[in-house]
Image (cartoon, rainbow, N blue to C red; front, side, top):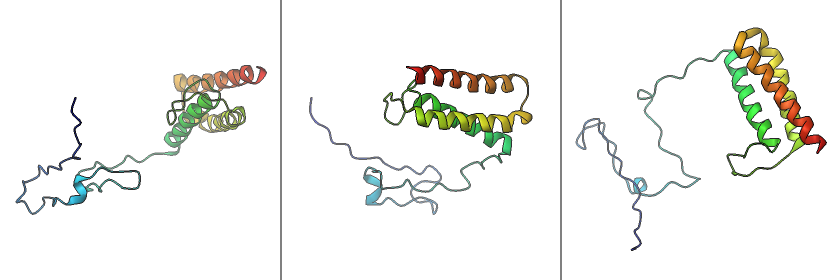
Length: 136
């Protein structure tokens, strides 16, 4: 099988063609691959919908999600998506579970029924798994 060289990408502006005053100029930099130090070109503010305004409840729920995922990873029960490895760090797991429990207590008056039960179950499951892992 012959080796093929990737030539990068071609940027096509579909807003009005190459003769349009809004067309982006083709530069040699656009034909090279991005590495970790390069940043993607900024998007036009008008093409992106505005971000929704998040209240305290939504931000706390996001924190619960992040802390919960981190706790499962630190317990060694889920693979770390950054490394695809399973490693155990009980000190980190305890810190995240304790933080999650504190945020859960703070958000509890702001949520109802099924969501409240789901949050309580998450805290309970993580604590039980921590105790099991620590006893091993």
